[in-house]
Length: 196
Image (cartoon, rainbow, N blue to C red; front, side, top):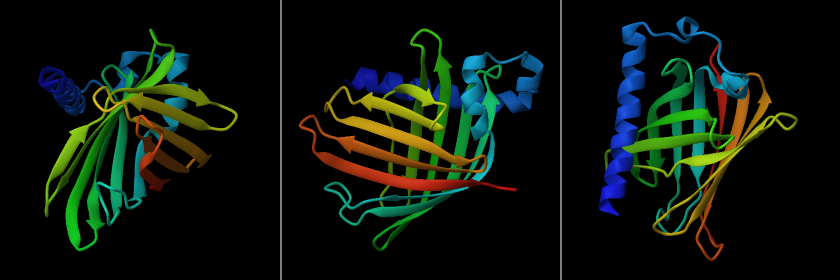
């Protein structure tokens, strides 16, 4: 279990390191040729957004939390992966903290599904950080919705995240985790608006 977690952390670190260096190296997506059609749905995320999210009170966080972020999303790794960097702040009861996350997403040609991983870090007043298992799912063009799901290998908990585009500049999202008995243990929701 420790080896698997270290492997996930290392993978996340490598992807973040690579995608951070790409703009410095001048490897922009425009220089890498046309992207496959399967990646087209992800284009709508490119740019900068103001985002807010809230987590309902639960067993692990009895006071719930509210966060605000500024996000920057670009194409990376030869224009085949989305790379999001989000920085902001959060509050949970009396506790205030710096909050940040990174999101990496692509279309997995082998799985025929969209695939993503999220890394997060809350610092100040009790540090907490981690990364999720790889989530996979499908894009619904008619509903303008991306649904991703992952099952935690250790606990058996299932997390389902749904992002819906209201229009070209606004999207909403929900994330719900249920334990292996089906009990809801975490609910988060939020919205984002593209910066003009």
